[in-house]
Length: 541
Image (cartoon, rainbow, N blue to C red; front, side, top):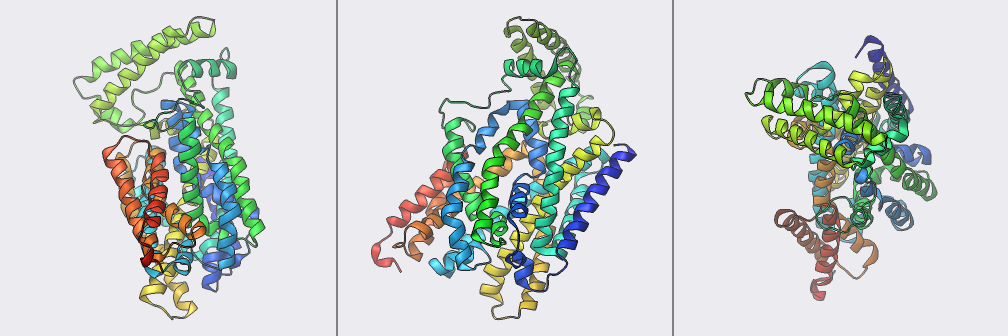
């Protein structure tokens, strides 16, 4: 990056953090620190909810996902609008009326303390694992830009985010999310617009769509039903709906956002805004990846987008032959793309594309099976975007990362204090004591995120990894809350047992079948409910 890019990046991030801290300057009680005094307007909650989900992984990995696999990942979100309507109708009023700090606090009122504790521990395990992955995404950015080891970049990013989260609490998190989301939206449209402008003049946007379509990169809707295919219309509508119901209805990192609302109406508006805006946003991010793919049809991309690994395999004896094949395949693909735009059949282009992909796979094998999807968009931005725009897009990526990390660390601290520390370890203490504990737990989970971020290195596409990780637990959580809301005759022991059986079913499906992870959410929820209903009636409480 050039000096002006650093000015744009640093200026954007400093302004966001200062604004968030200024808006949260009065945090004298635990209620204000963890729930913002229930005084947040709908638009701040709406963009905070969106920013929490739209992490750096969304910018870095989703664009790379479209480059490698096309736009079919957008189907992952097709069930989200339905889920948002259901949560607005049934979940938000219950949580608001109950006056709880966490979703899991409600479970004790409905069932008992052990069910609350079990669900809280499940959340801490799942979200604790995910926060490290979310932190590793911006570490990739700094590693690419600065050439530093990723362990240092994770430490720098984690320390910065945890500092303002610890000082400002949920108000700082929400208002910084609000600003960060605005930066992300601007960065998204600037990136797409400039990617189109960098195409050859005789190609244009229409030509880009022709080439991307011939390469299978515009496959936004796949109607073929396949249990083992992660992204098709039916998996997205049903499996995606269950995942969204669990994430926005049971995950404290999201529930805590709309618990800060001034009213039920304000909280509902924040969720319904996301129901309308989420799919278009993901579509444009994926479209950006597809346009980058077309750009690299005419501008030769590196054999591997991970520069460090590329330099390492250049010393391998087999590299020369793979590189020569790659060069020939690229030249043939570029020629075939021009012929395609002139009206030729797409078959020649598709064969050339297959040869390019085969050469890249062989290079990835030399690099130990490397998946370089997460480096595609970063390489494009840093090498081809004009001065100032690089800083803006980097600011968007960092803003996305900070919003997600701060939200997850804050929610982990909230559950640790309210559901574990206050309930079981140190009950009956003063509000000042719990406020201090909240800050210390924020620091703890921030340090934990830094320590576990390195595990993101070998996970391949981070956007897939983080959603698969969540799906291992979300179905069970959704099943318990389904029992709490809609099955009043089910007691505590039945719900507790149902959760254990449901989680066992999810891990069995993961271990012994090839079924798409989106179905884990359906399996977990259904098994929890059926197991609880089958529990002996005499044991109900």
